[in-house]
Amino acid sequence: MRADARKNRDHLLAVAGTTITEQGVDVSLRDIARRADVGLATLLRHFPTREALLDALLHTSFDELTAKAGALETSGSPGEALVSWLRDCVAWTTEYQGVIALMAAAIEDTESALHTSSVTVREAGARLLTRAQASGMARTDIDGADLFALVMALAWVGDQRSLAPRADHIFDVVASAILTNTASSDAEGERRPRVGS
Image 1 (cartoon, rainbow, N blue to C red):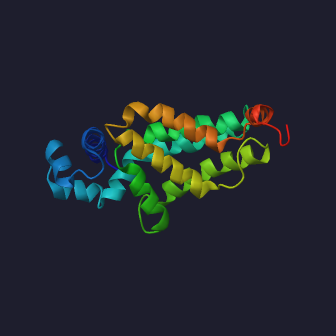
Image 2: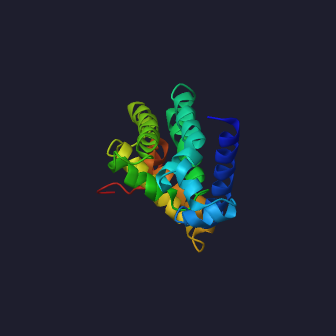
Image 3: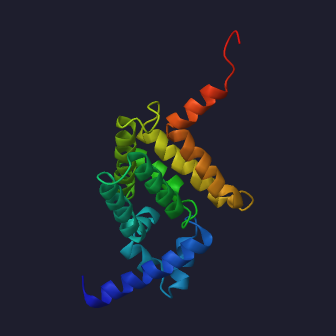
């Protein structure tokens, strides 16, 4: 790619990032082009679809989430690794309102420009979940698809203005529901009245 074309592409991505952060992923491509001081045809020449634009914009973030999951697979407590990645993933999705819904749709649509990145992120989380399950630190009745659905749900909470102040608390509740906590279960057993006592 020529230097001037690269510069134009980088400018479009910078403007798109700012615009999507402010207005969400459903913002008009025409609005992005206008804010970048180019015609819509110029934007579409670089990014023929909304998904192609988002994939280019989010590629670094996808790579970072996947790399972080890879690093966490070999470090620390499997339960803590899972929760740490889950927290980062949810925080990232709330930067671009509506992106998680596009990712969910892209997983099912092999023609989407977001398909490969979305599947890779979901699989990265699934590996962390499997590791936590194998160590007895996470419940075994959920899989990677369920984990991704929980990311979607938590991202939705963060996107709702009235619920956003509760997002951290709700995250903690969901995370504790994913993890098994034998100490907590034992304590409940001690408090539970015995039959016949």
